[in-house]
Image (cartoon, rainbow over all chains, first blue to last red; front, side, top):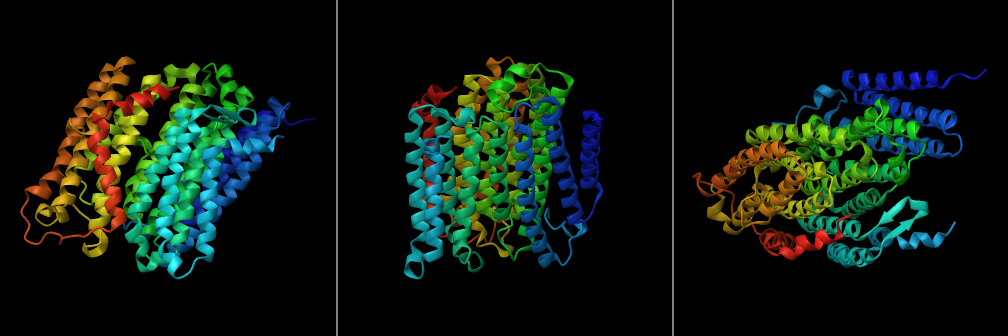
Length: 103
Length: 474
């Protein structure tokens, strides 16, 4: 018995919007990073599922998933480096210490 | 697979060669060779403009249609390289400062890798190549925004930029995944045939547009702009506001007209709302900004709104109007940022505000004159290039039948004139006992400012520029 595609898509949608919710409500830079990672992973699931269920003749979706994972890792590396930089400058990675710009 | 196909991507491969030369030079050069580093980079980039234009003679389609280039795309690439070389020219003084000197090579390398990413974005005819190009353009840019390691503001701007850009690309990818789900291919050519405007495809279109909207900083997605622009080093702000925006707008135009052609009614409605919001809200916010870089951030949001007037038409006329607008915008904006960069070294705290500009005419008449011309051009006052670029953009939207939109944009031009003239007034009229002392530009900045001045004055009058661009369109 195979699992219907809808279940995967619902999982991906839930994961994606957990990420969106986290991005808007969390107040710690690492949590924000994790939220965006969740969103990117939801996208990867979507591509893999669409490829496997709807368009199995080519592998475009799987390739997109692989590149997506690689690029998400690169993004995380850059973001973590900048977060370390923020920590060195502000001695904290809480959002409330990042309000210096503007005035 | 035919590996010789790689050598047909002339602009990308030659830019990669420049990249490698600079990278190796940075590793091995010491002492006296180090002093010619900046001049070498400038020369290589100026030479690359020629290579880009030369490559534009023929149409190229590679890798089964993933990569495509024609004269228009080659021209836009040359334009972006030209803009980046202006940025590099203006960066000389900043790169001489103690913190940046050790990282001089890194600056060039990061800048060039974003440029390669933008090239791929422009030439992409497949969503995978487009996505990789976009990330290659935005990740090194995040590093550049956070380049001043010991300044708190730079790190803050960097984290704001990188997180919003990740968020935006995740949203865009979610949209693309649904497009893939309904059509089953990611090639631009084939996708247009599969689109029919179902609910899921409209959802995908909106998500996709939101993702690119972050890059172009249109209004509902503009919240990162002011903070990132203010915190970033000034040369990087200039790069963000002209080059990265120009590449993203051109790509958006290509994708909307190539891929989403069957859904024209839907995306025109969407862009209509976004354009009105961008121009109006950004103008209202720009009036009360005191910090010059923040002011230019809001000005650039409203300029992006004007560019969207060309995108909404979706015609060949719109494309040439858009490219001409970007060219003129590069000139005017680079002039303003070059002057901000020059002046802010003489300001306490390094943040130039409108009060600092008071009475600038007494001490720096030449810089003041150039700043005035650049602001006139941004505002669209007749003899300068900005007037003509705005005129062509309005014409293209008008011919496509968006009369009310053009009217709203015209009203907003008047509002924007008000805040551009506020600065002109501060420089010429407002009395100030101790204005910023006389500033002496270095040679590189002087060259770039002269190029900008020529562009602002001549681009509008020399009609062959626009006609030349118009011949390339589509």
